[in-house]
Length: 149
Image (cartoon, rainbow, N blue to C red; front, top):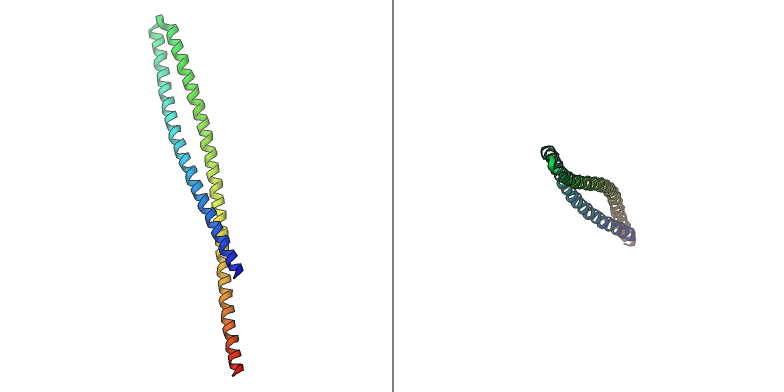
């Protein structure tokens, strides 16, 4: 009975751990979704920055008298583009790291599920053994009852 209780307790602990891991995986997946959306926004801003850079370069050619002022604007846009590119790279690294974490959590989840399966099989064997012992006890009790008559 104590072994059965230990198996049940272990099973409950593993299920709680599994639930915690699932919640953590869901949280990480939510963060991954947010990072992916932010990455898409950064890419869109990068595209806009590249378009703006092209427009500024055309203005420089068309307005040679404002060459110096437009070059300053161009440098500002390039700085923005560099910052956006850097941010995009950082977000890509975060996404990759989060994906690796998610894969590791999925493996842990699979390991826990396997352990639960093993414990359930052990529990079934224990229940079968207990049922056999109960049957054997009943036979012995019957034999004793007959012997006492």
